[in-house]
Image (tube, rainbow over all chains, first blue to last red; front, side):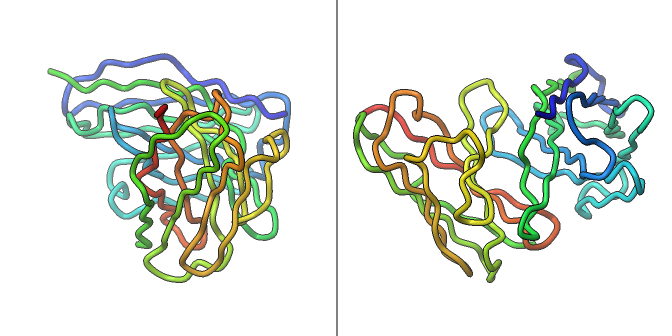
Length: 121
Length: 107
C-alpha cells in the first residue's frame, strides 16, 4: 500500500513562493502520476496538475501555467510542487495523490495528509 | 473544461437510510468518473472508480452507476461513519475536475 507523507504547514507573504514535498513509501512511485489537488477553506477540491516521475512529464491546467512547477526525484521517491507569486486566494490545504490507471481511467487512490499553506501579510 | 455538478448539495439522513447522490457532466465522459468521500479535516478517500468499480477495502453498501453525462452514487444502508462530504471527479479530459460536493449530515 503506497503511503504519501507531505511536508509541514507553511505561512507565506503575498508575492512569495512555497514548495511542498510529498514522499512516497511502500509502493510504486516512478511510473504512476503524482497529482496535486488543493482545497481552500470551506471549499471543494481543485486539481492542480500532475507529474509522472519516470518521464518527468507534467500536465496542469492553464490557470496554473505561469505559477506552478512540479518536479520529482526518483532517488528519494519525493515529488515537489512549487507555487509562485502567492496571493491570499492561494490559502488552502494542498494534497498530493497517486493517480492509478485501471480500465484506462485515472483515479486518485492514495493521498497525502495535506499541507496547509496560509498566505498572509 | 468539463463542468461537474452534483445534486443535492446537502442532504439529511438517518442511519439505515438509502442515500443517492447524482453527478452530471457538462459533456459526455463515458465511464471516466470517480467518487470520493471526505471527512472533516481529512484527505479524500476513493470509493468508486470507472463509474462502478468498488475500490479495494470499501464496504459493499457503496455502489456507483451511470455513463455518458449522468452518474449516481448509492449508499444502500447509511452507517454512522458515512456522514461526510462526497465528491465526483471526471478523468476523461484534463484538467480533471471535481463536482462541488454533497454533504450528508444527520437528520
